[in-house]
Amino acid sequence: MSFFAYSVKEWRWNNMKVVIAMDSFKGSMTSLEAGYAAKEGILKACGAKVVVKPMADGGEGTTAALVEGLGGTYIEVAVTGPMGRAVNARYGSLEGGRTAVMEMAQAAGIVLVERGGLDPWKASTTGVGEMILDAVRRGCREFLIGIGGSATTEGGIGMLQALGYVFYDADGQPLPPVFGSLGKIERISAEAVPEVLKECHFQIACDVTSPLCGENGAVYVFGAQKGVKEQEKGEMDEAMRHYAQKTAEFCGKDNSLEPGAGAAGGLGFALISFLPNAKLKSGIDIVLKAIGLEKELADTDIVVTGEGRLDAQTAMGKVPAGVAQLAKKYQCRVVAFAGGVTEDAVKCNEVGIDAFFPIVRGVATLEQAMDTENAKRNLSLSAEQVFRLLF
Image 1 (cartoon, helix red, strand yellow):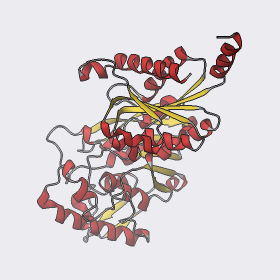
Image 2 (cartoon, rainbow, N blue to C red):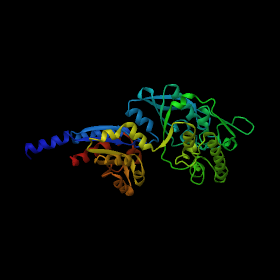
Image 3 (spheres, rainbow, N blue to C red):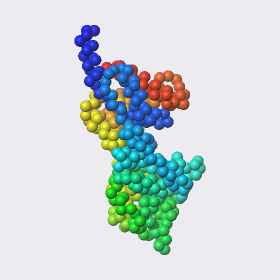
Image 4 (tube, one colour):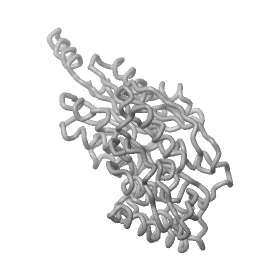
């Protein structure tokens, strides 16, 4: 091959831009670990400019992705756990303390409940409110909150009580922040709510579309996984409807039918009803905006994405699909890597992923495949070989 041909190839390598936006490979690699492993392999194959961006979908791992990717810091605070015991919750602080990134599961997640200890009548979101207040006191005014993985079904009244709202029964007695209170609410007071909350803006990462009540609502759809018995569902849904009615009277608007109101046992409903500047949004959309991925893609040639397992559900709004759809807006080629790939993953091609590849390179146990060092090496080697072909 002529010197000129080599020079053209080298010029193309050195003027190609690749953006890597990988979700975490849960239990194996964080978003950034996966991203930098792919970058290592790509740079062995070519001299392209490679940019790594943190990614998540608003669920588990969102705080870590944004804090580590955007140069934030972690804050730990002792809060009331879902079953009343103190837990240490961690959230992220970005933009010099102006923005807080939280996952409600840190304070009221199902993973915080001991095996066999789920009780929908007692589980509370009190710790979520305490976490928010801690951030407010530190100067945070912008919030990104993921509300997946909850252990609760109490409509978010625990969070609301921690923020200063008081719920009274027919005798004028304040009610405890548990599900059993929902059907007894007759009056709501906001006298103790800090005025500073009106200055705060909340983006709520929620990909659940369930309303608060009914057969598609919080109790009927998600109650069983939080300990609700089949014979309790009717009674509990009626209590939730009563709560929605009293909330509508207090707030002047009924948000119970809003898509996502039933998320996290009704926490979505509480947030958009009682906090003046709260909006439910797609988790992936929130993260894409927070990391500024679209701006980065304007002059990008190839986008690399992926997650632990690529399947048909990936195409239904998970990180790789969201990244691919945005990338196609700028005519980028999209390559995805995954620990495992199912037959129905071909659906991913329909949402903008041009080609996808499993990274496991030989027979291995699940434990071996998910070992962090093995996974990073496999991803790096896979990325190198794919980019040798591309270039």
